[in-house]
Length: 447
Image (cartoon, rainbow, N blue to C red; front, side, top):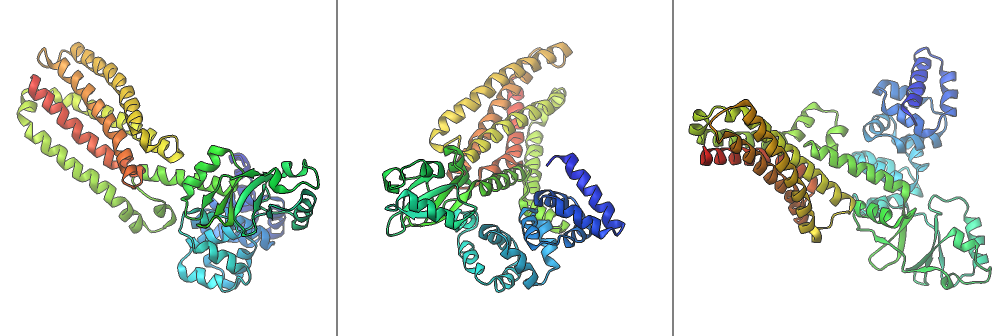
């Protein structure tokens, strides 16, 4: 939905609600797609959001809208509902969407809703039993599987009897134990002779993931093999669910948001929490790291007070040297973090990645180092060797920054930590301290 379309729908709904034209607002909502309604509700205040949500007549539409809302908006709406009413909407969701919703709610609230779900509760509880952010947590337990010995005409009959299904992109083939042995597309199925058995034309050993596979790795598998869905098996290779492409899109968006927030030194929790005190506490460790790093910079400058007092012009060029080092370090760090997140970079090729990033930065450092030396010569600052000092400082600082920005994410990833944390204040502070030390050492040596 374009922003213009969303703005028109939002303005129309607000105008009708505030005028008390409830019937007109209801008719407008009935004509609108759930995704459009969710987009609008995310942009409204809590009061207006509740007023518009209450006008949605169909429980099914309410469920679709809830599944598409951001967490904070969804929590506001569910907070005003009794558990039986909330359960009625959750029942109309797919099991994976319901599990995701309940996982985000306080444990007590989620348990209350679960007790009112009836038969649906079993599938949802199975998904809740898997680790968060795993394939088992986001999979749909609804899939279409057939025995390998069944013939095509009978397979088509079963598919027709099953009716419309969220995960009916592929037909999964299992043996008598329920183990996944093959897969075929619906197109392959209808093009085969009616008396041919599935095992005779299925694709054996299909791409699969286990219930413990991290959701980010699942997204990489779907993207790499261009799949509409990927089957999920347990430790014994028994088919237990399927992750569809719409869930993968959600995963990619969530992971991208998480990485961007980590680059800024914060987390998704801050967006979800309305508390300013909690937000400040989440940001505090990152800013504290930068604060302590600043102390290190002050200490280093104090140690080289003699050089600074003799050549005051060093202070004029220090900001640009630090800024260029910080920029090139952030560029390298972001490239590496993004490459690791998308699966384009693998740890076994760390040497190739590092050499490429550092080599690219070395060429840039050479260009800008010569440029800064030329500018210092033009200004005529300091002794004759001063242009060489600032040019060399720029060059070395940028190379060190590129090395740190490339290696820190790789080392964190190899250690099992999230490499995105290396691209926040941690890298920036390290590069600033290294830049100050480099500049002062070169200046004290050559001046």
